Image 1 (cartoon, rainbow, N blue to C red):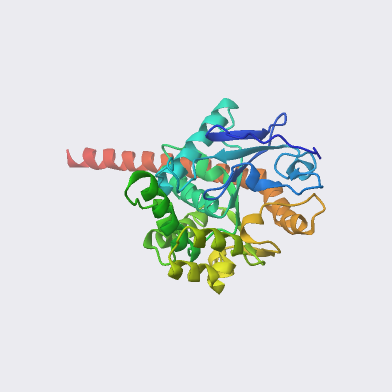
Image 2 (cartoon, one colour):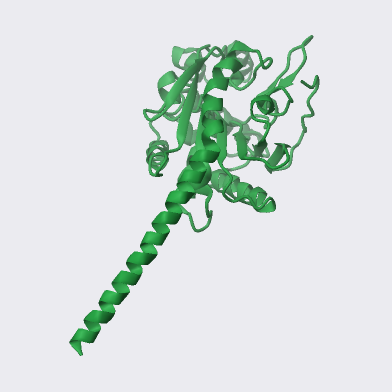
Length: 341
């Protein structure tokens, strides 16, 4: 384990390669959440202790999966302040697929299996990317069939109550700098009851089950509440509306993303003894919380090459059958034309 894994202060947007062994057999892609540091989201830091980055360190993912190429999707996720990006989910999903396509073209590995890890809203980016890969197969050839597994850490498939508070704060910040309030499309999506979020969830569940061997999905949910005391004190000093502060004090906000919201009917699930923001931070390889994650990871990642191979074999057989069927139809049409003469 490296005592101080190198974390880029301002990483370049796109797919950052964290580990690239010779002859990789699987691509692992991690996607951070909203308004989060791309690398520090996955980094454990504590004064007096060694830092630990389970995506990068030798005794992290690489210990169980030495032949995995590990990448981090870096995107602009700020939703407030002067230079916030006005992002849409479909744009982020397309950026992820384009970046992954580019990295795979570099190694000529278009059919290498892909396993994705998403924290919080990063999971929704992954879900949208899978839907896009399925609906736009000509634009992203072999991508849909290559995605064999998805892991979601506190992903709000049914939204999160705190999104309304964050949206209000974001509007205040933007108005302070520009003189007008601007909606954050991503925060609007995360509000419970949002129809676009419902459609995304339905579309993802549908796309997961369409392949001959379905995409394996495992969801992790938080078992510790989020403490908003420091945030409430800060917002109080900035004259934040009292009704919004009351929402932060509520049980729903303390839970941040409920177990129900973080789970899918078609998936397996595991609880982690972590608050929401710390769900993808682990102290070491022996951390009990990481051991909870390891089991599902090993099951899905180790089977990824076999699953992808089976899918592409099935696709090839289907394509041959389609060509044969086309020839039969053409012969029958020719015979019909001949009989009419």
